Image (cartoon, rainbow, N blue to C red; front, side):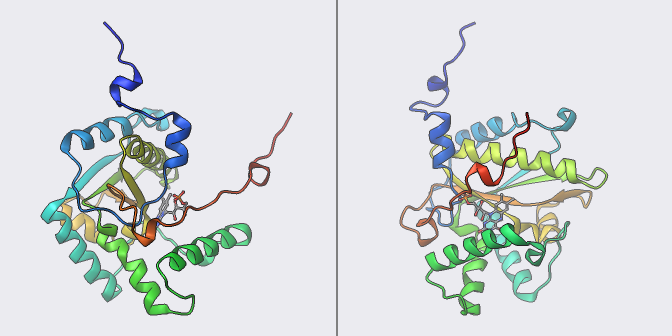
Length: 234
Ligand SMILES: Cc1cc2nc3c(=O)[nH]c(=O)nc-3n(C[C@H](O)[C@H](O)[C@H](O)COP(=O)(O)O)c2cc1C
C-alpha cells in the first residue's frame, strides 16, 4: 500500500513551524461556512491528540446554522441576567505576579484593538459579549468530557485535544478561538444540546474563516523568552 505524503493529505501544506506561528486566536470570522468534508478532516486530526491511558475522553459537539443561533441567543440572555452555570471555577483575581501582568497585557491589547478605553466598562462588556456571538463564526466545537476524580487529568487531555484541533484548523486555512467564556454557561449549553449532566465542559472553540479586516484580528500576542519559563537540569 502506498503511503500518502503530507502534501497529498493537505495540498499546499505548510511546515509545522509555519502552522504553529500562523495560529492565533481569531476574534472576527467571515460568515462563509466550512464544508462538512473539511470539518471531518479537522476532527480526524484532533482525534490524534494524546490522552492519559489513551482514554480519548472527549465527545465533541459541532454546532452550526439555526442551532448556533439558538445557542447564541440563550447565552446572551443568560449572560445579561448573570445566570452563570460553570462546571469549574474561574477567577482572574487569583492570577498573581507575572501571570497577572500577562493577563492585564492581553486585556489592554484586546480592548485596545476593539477601540475600548480601560475605564469604559460598558464598552468592555460589549467587546467581551462578542464571545456569545462566537465572534461571528459559523461553527463552534464543544468538547465535552466525562468527570474522573478531581478532573485535572481529563482537563489536561481536553487541552491536548483543543490544541490539536486548533493547529489542524490553521493547517486547513481556517481559524479558531478557544473560549472559556462559553464554559461559564456549561449548564445552558448542555440543556440546549441535550447533553447529560455527567458530561462536563471547560471551553468551546468557535471556528471558520478569519475576517482579516476584523479589529479583533489586528494584533498578535507575544510570548516570554524560554529563559523565563524553562529550568534546565543536568
Ligand atoms: C483554554 C483557553 C480559553 C480561552 N478563552 C478565551 C475566551 O473566553 N475569550 C477570548 O477572547 N480568548 C480566550 N482565549 C484565548 C487567549 O486569550 C489566547 O490564547 C492568548 O491570549 C494567546 O493568544 P493567541 O492564542 O492568539 O496566541 C482562551 C485560550 C485558551 C487556551
